[in-house]
Image 1 (spheres, rainbow, N blue to C red):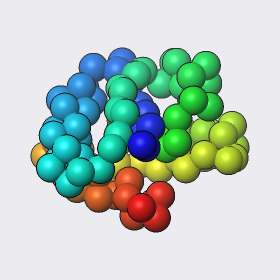
Image 2 (image 1 turned 180 degrees about the vertical axis):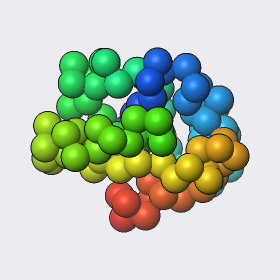
Image 3 (image 1 turned 135 degrees about the vertical axis):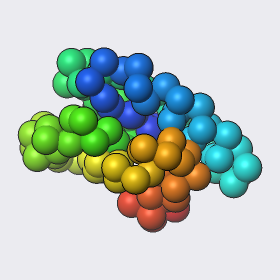
Length: 100
């Protein structure tokens, strides 16, 4: 099971994307645990997750989070996939990054 943390400014704009990702993962039979949280919580909870995905509005934190969590996969979600709330595309990104 992959534990996926979605990160945005307040933790709310990624909620719809999270639901869409959960639906896509079920269809793909890809076991996941997905949560969305604000950037302010990441340093407290980030170590508990396999992959940290940043929404476009907080992608400027990418370098800092990669330094903070060197053993974790940290990436940003494309503006196109985020704007479309394309859960399938983001799950595919996760699978590619995690080599699943």
